[in-house]
Amino acid sequence: QQQVRQSPQSLTVWEGETAILNCSYEDSTFNYFPWYQQFPGEGPALLISISSVSDKKEDGRFTIFFNKREKKLSLHITDSQPGDSATYFCAATGGNNKLTFGQGTVLSVIP
Amino acid sequence: EAAVTQSPRSKVAVTGGKVTLSCHQTNNHDYMYWYRQDTGHGLRLIHYSYVADSTEKGDIPDGYKASRPSQENFSLILELASLSQTAVYFCASSDISNERLFFGHGTKLSVL
Image (spheres, rainbow over the protein chains, first blue to last red):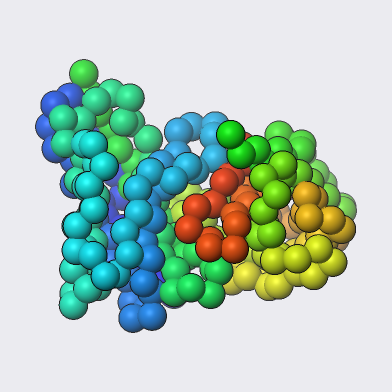
């Protein structure tokens, strides 16, 4: 049972375009949603996060949009750069110190 | 910068053999985690610990044991390795807020 789902599995955009990565969840007790970025051969690293009391969180070119009613969120990467090519994981927790990850979206940015 | 070090970086094991993966953190964090990464499944939690000498089962604990002998060290033990346990294993640590996990570089385990 996948409690956190991501789509698409892979995404290719041109340099300068906006990449949109989607995430949905099932557990209504989830209240904190971090996104992790992983480069090949490395461990994931926290990129940006949002709590359920907010509907938007922005950090430079990265923005999370959150819809609590629909249990959906998305990560928008504006002005995508080749260096943004990585795997992006949406995750969720309800405060029980257990983080549940989605299956990931592999982003490729073509110069 | 927070540091989580895993060893070995890669390992080849035989089916039925015993495998121990080690993790060391210098973050002074209370929480430590073992995740498994497989293509199409993302990261799945195997075991975690919030204090030395105590471990908790995660979402997929079957076939794995964990040991937390000190705050800094957390090991994952496969008593009888199986083909299905071929994967990349990540250790992570966090403070009590759990708002940010710091991951190691991973251990690539191949069971033949």
